[in-house]
Image (tube, rainbow, N blue to C red; front, side, top):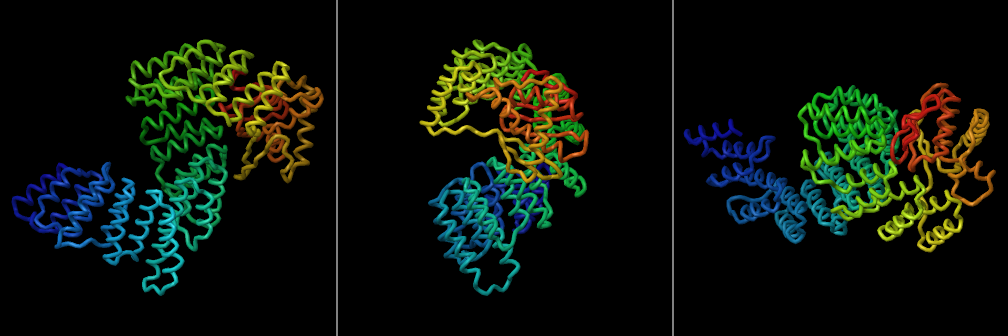
Length: 608
């Protein structure tokens, strides 16, 4: 901008500023370049004797993308009132964008009427943006009506420029799919996606991101695999969109493929893609590879530092987590509130109570950050795991923020861990008021009663669940082999290899008994005889996934399991022995953290 201002001064001195093309280029640079200065752009525009259509369009476009898009509407009004210039097909898309971003439906309808009057309502660029405007304002019916008329009615007419029309229609389909994704209508979006006569890379990206961001991770990965089979080359946005889904599913092999694809196709691993790769490797159990990606980044910012800190914390590597925080400070990078969530989580998993208190104080006193509900949740979890239940409850009651169900669940889990029935009942009541249809509180209270053999209490809780129509989330585990994700539920026999899996489970059970394993039947929270309890423990989802991994891979191949719930004590103790019996490294990611089982021991040191 400093250089531009010097050129501007020279043009004023030499009277070249009167050339409308030269003035328009000055405006374009100051309004829409990477070095833009909108205030300066406005001054240039106001100094123009007679701004032409290009200049109006440039300023309207810049303002439509600004923090106050309504300013674009004011300039558009000037343009309409200026008899010497007429809006064109490049004007209306920016005006519609401004209306959509500002959610000004009334003005958007008026602008739509003007577009019709100027005969631009058949231009594909204008149509796609007016549809996007209606979608942004939540008027799905109008958006769908325009889409249907454009694609299924007008599309039957003869078109001279066929390629341009097809490209425009693809954009319109993408706009509609994105609109349905944004309001959570994924099924409608997928139906439209499947009906598309032609798809661009944007079409695939919209569906992948839509599934991933709404928690449908398996579907996101499936669409990504379909994209590969359709031989559509993924781009940077594809990789950034699909990696979080792979992270959540523990799909390491697919994640490795994405990383290799980026390297081979010269897709730069910047801070955004780098953070996604670090997160993927960490959540898929390969923390060493996550560290390699982090060390290889050309530039690190607070997001990349926070991601590696969170990854190390998840794997129980508390010392490395704290060391990286010190390195971050030495690098002059200011920590964010997300950084402190990772640090507090590391302290919680390692039982570092004093260190956790220090970091919480450091965040407020040194970094000047206001603790969020997540930070209080980490502190409650840290204190609760360490058995400081009264201090944990006191922290919740004295918080400046209203506690949510996550915080109460952390305390309830600690009550179960330490067998505090009275506090557990009290906490469960809070939870049932906050989230009456969430199964977590009912199940946790039932588990407390069951662990103490209080089956009458269990029956009361289950009756409450039945009356409230509350359903328990089933235990579910995933294992990825050769890029394919296999899902198993508790007592699952639906897999094509179920007979072989069942045989392996029986073999595992026999071998465990030979080395002195005794089933921990206190983990069976149903009133049944001891033999049935022992049998049911054999069919937990993570054990089924391990059995499948053992029959499907070569000896000594590491097994990586992802589980949706916290691993139970019986599974934890038995998997330690399985790792020794079968000479396998078994990595299990449960809802809370990673467990690395090697030669009969676990990385969590039995503190989880």
